[in-house]
Image 1 (cartoon, rainbow, N blue to C red):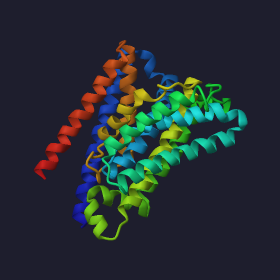
Image 2: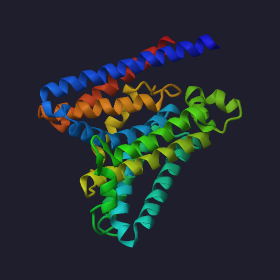
Image 3: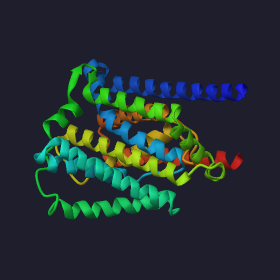
Length: 318
């Protein structure tokens, strides 16, 4: 058993060293293209911009460890931001409560559909995303009609700097990231998430209520998506229907770059953090050389397809 653990730790160390190498290489190349990137202020902004992607990647990591995925996370994030921006006139606390209940509701629907009724996660969450687009398209002209600007305190927590390169959103990421790492590595739920992703049938035969684990995973994912939506809305100052659309593919790409298997059961949020940082630096580099959003999406799609193909081949061999 100790030999197995040593091998796993060795592979993990090699993978993390590889990710650090990629991040460092991208950092140097970007700095050579734009010398301002090497400044403390620029590093602080880069870390700040990585926060929403890191939070979305946290949600995707938990879902993917169970063998699922959440493609409705963009509209979950957008919806939470809309609710807070429009309902904040009634009090910020009440607005955040509404947004939290909204995230729990959508996460519960996704989790029950996937876990209890056996729906394909990709199809279910993609369908949910379409439903939410329709709901909020109608809602912003009727029951959600109002100001689309974010409250000042959300803007402060999403973009306020403490001392370069440390900012409020970066501290929030450290806090919530630490909670996710603790959840996955030190709690019973974390162990069950890995067990369900590794072999749901075996977990069920061992007495695990698999559907409850999947339900918890999708609710946590939705809550993290909602938090990311507030960060994105706070950084932009206002909300729109396309608020988080551009981060759906990157949130998946960050997770698979970090070594989480799309088949479930293998991976960690530590790797996803590295993936989020790598993609954020890559985005800065592409923006510096004036690449369009379409080029970025092509690159993210290529990364996801390549790694998905690699995992598929490795699974066939095993």
